[in-house]
Image 1 (tube, rainbow, N blue to C red):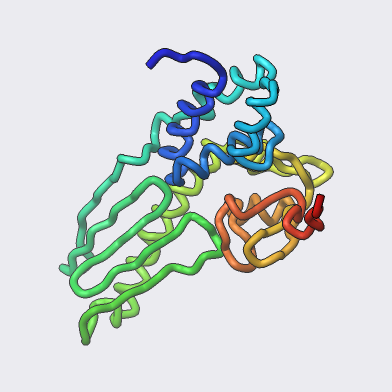
Image 2 (cartoon, rainbow, N blue to C red):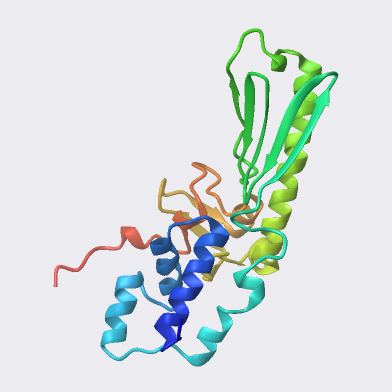
Length: 226
């Protein structure tokens, strides 16, 4: 593919961003647009048609390898481990940003938001998870794997997103904005930068994803009729 201009650069980066964060391509385009100061990709395209162009260093910055790709994590990478506890088998699967562990008649899902409770499903009765000792050991294995995934995500996002400054401000891992307070578009909750970093940029109240978290509640602003 021949890169003709900055728009081509942005489109290439959006494809990489969508793979890295398992989001839709048009959502990735909107993220890039917001990084460039536009409300969404359509607004960026409209500004482009009117003569707007990004500063050269903006295009270079978003193509840094540490932002685009991770050497240890990828959308298509799944690590599978099999084992047993007292003769009861289990299979642990570690995906891009989640962990699933399951066995005969049961499964447990761990998301990457620390405040999100594990989702436990059982399909048979009696069930191996009825054994408290077995359940405790399985949960320990799953939690340790989920913590490792969170550590990898935190490394991808960098200290600017995971370690608040003295004034409490942090950088959004996807949009790039910096603020000490953040608003959830899904439930309208206001959270501190420290709260967002501690919960891997998921809303502490409703657990909405980082895509729903913004430095200001722009959706509350009055819409101009003109």
